[in-house]
Image (cartoon, rainbow, N blue to C red; front, side, top):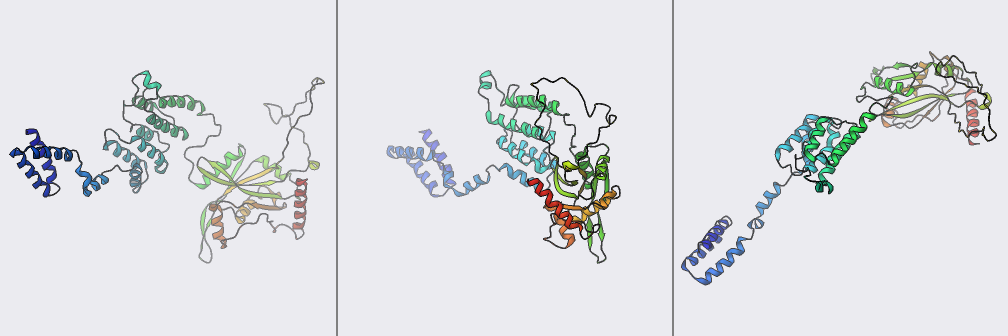
Length: 449
């Protein structure tokens, strides 16, 4: 009897928050129970049990809205809110601290780590080892460590292990070598016999082997000055210690007579003594070509360069010059060995000899139009007087927008494009273009044959 009264009192306390009518109904039930009517008591027990197991929260709309407001915020929203201030390392670390301090059990840590890995390039921390270690610290410690060999056999907590391997793979893609702190975190999180720990061991085995194998390494921080970047890029392309880099024009802003400001591009070129010798031996009746732009990737930065080249020398005009025996003291450039050959030896070899023609010089500029490249050719004439007697043709492709747009604004024609082949007429007579066109047609017919 006392148990029934206690249940009725609890039901009445719940119904008082909803309306007044259920409260009066509870009083009537209590009076009937105290009077000792058996039918009413049986009915009240049945009703109390039915209403006791029902959830009144489902019937109320305001509490549904409260639950919806208290739902977990997506992890991308955390980084978007932090990105409103500034996308820097301190902001990224602040988001990690907020997440780790919000819940001790770290609910949804796998989704959070995947979201953080995706947003790391935006904050500029994709190459920071300390940030990767802090991201691994988000995992709960000593929870995913297998306790026996059976758990290790059945891949204990596979989803969390895949997430840990993904963190190490992103470090591998950006060339980040883990340290001892990374190893300690992985042992605390997944144990010594786990997939992330094996991935760590593979990285530590191969990375030191391939760290210094590149003979032409690219620095992590490229120079921001365009002239210094062009100097570094041209030196890397030429790969000749005797090559000389010349700065023909520095970037500056000039004011015309009409008061209009014009931004002049930088022009940086490179030429080696062997290229100057080849250009001096070039036949003046044959033209030289300025071609480009050609892309060159330095990590995530793309630069463009132009070359001054000529067509291959015809076979009937080639002159074989004897090798100088003192040109190289380490190994001979030519060997004449009289060896006894057997009848089964083959003296013929299948060699694909492809002559692409000599390259005389290279340059880099921020505006790849013909007027800028003319200044480069004029600067080359100081050390190569033969360029004043050799016709120069421009074969300029449709370059990227950052190279073509400034040229269009300077010339005043928004839809102007440089011609595929245009001749410098200031140093040629009137009949010279016809001769050049005929030579060009003959060369193309020879290639087709």
